[in-house]
Length: 67
Image (tube, rainbow, N blue to C red; front, top):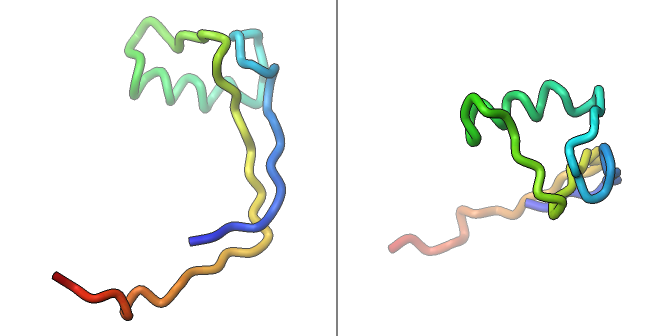
């Protein structure tokens, strides 16, 4: 699958954990799933991206031989 569109950085780059309203909900859900009750650890080596696809294309996978 291929996406064409725009991508923007959300929050500081790299992410160090400063308050960002746009990330409050997603980081809380991410922490609940992967980090546990202590919250999300910010190691300064990651960044959040927001993708806005304008066009999506996909191939015809019926042509791939099955085992």
